[in-house]
Image (cartoon, rainbow, N blue to C red; front, side, top):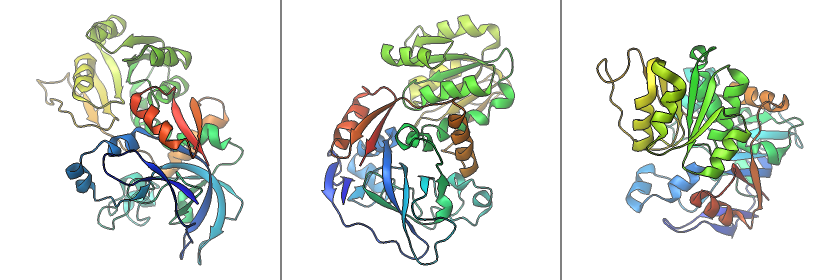
Length: 347
């Protein structure tokens, strides 16, 4: 079968021919109908060799942690699912037995590192292939009548912002304001979720005029360039109260500094983007009772909720479609920031 593999550190991914995987005990083989390209992949492929080694991921590795498909074959002992069933793959897979996993919060599994459990495409062969192995049927959620190409990115680009926003919903009441920094793949979905789930006024920031236009198209009340005027533009909207919540889908030092400068009393600063930045904390550093969170992905039940929002027509992902042979081009476009929304690869 064909697969998109990251073979050499620092080089572009390659299309390779690899054997079709055979499911072992408890495993399920899924025939992929759509796979999403994500900035997490681009981030990993941008790492230098010493940084890559710190993750301990093997090479070569098939990319892709967003995937949907149909159940193709069951390993011995696998149950609860039938061949031919359309499914979505839940990416942040855990041990299934610790306290967070028992709640469906496998994104916060207590033993994943100890047991060397890694998500598909992020340490284990992923979904940018014709077939993928899933270790347990519980990681396969019913896709139902949802279009696979249009909705595959919801497994991350929908689930991650949904989980981030859900934690701030008690604060996003009438008269509140939410700032979304980065209106790309995750940010444009976050804007829709904020509009669907809260009465908050939504302010979008980005460096790209095209992405600001997308932000407006999907429901942002205000859209500003993320430049030296951004903080003043936000303050003109939020006033002395400050922003109720800021969702930073970049996670770089300049964006965290910007977010820190516009939050108010009891506000949330939610850092979702992959990055490392410093933020001052304490009674003299931030407005009183302001909170900083760094959520990761989301739970299995939350992914079901995201799919229900999609079925209700309340959230969608802007996508550009690529064949598997065109997958390296999809990642090149992702790295350049020239995609409108998400890239979806269809084997």
